[in-house]
Length: 228
Image 1 (cartoon, rainbow, N blue to C red):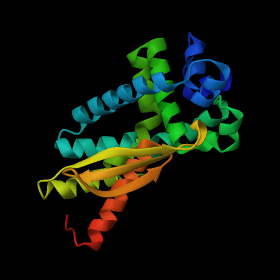
Image 2: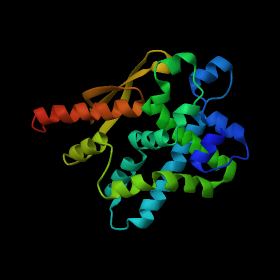
Image 3: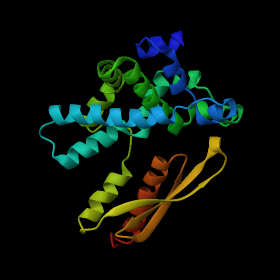
Image 4: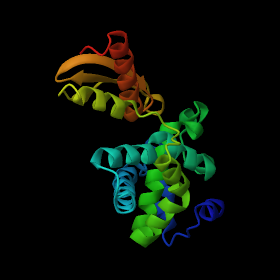
């Protein structure tokens, strides 16, 4: 854990928090301990708040839609995965043998989740100031790049929403199924326009499935010349 503490530039008072933040549900189920899922839930909210507060105060020229698009580019799965890889979170993850053998240490959805769980652990251990420092230390470059339009993520959901709003309609997403073992699930999500099914998509996480559903919907609309 010393190596990870150096990577994230934070020394925990309660190292059990960090250990939990690195514990995947597959390991937790096998060893009857707590996984990072509750921490991830908290970290997701903290990250959204910190980034929203920063871009609201620093990009006063952007309207609500622009702020939402900028935040989505910063806190997307690909962005968090990129940072988690730089910090070598995969090396320190506690996984079941099955999850480890099927590539859990490099799975984007897991790495993104762990970024959020570690953020929550820092917040619980030291408060909001070190949590903010963690976000800006490691997502600062992504924030700057997103503002310049240099994103590493194609936000199909936002593109679809902007398109359907032009026609006074609204896109919603509904889970269709979850298949496979806990360590290797595949999610299927359907996108509906004003309650009417348009397309679906698969992914290793619900967020990825939603993005793929939106992507497939955009491809379908393109073939139909935008007709809904």
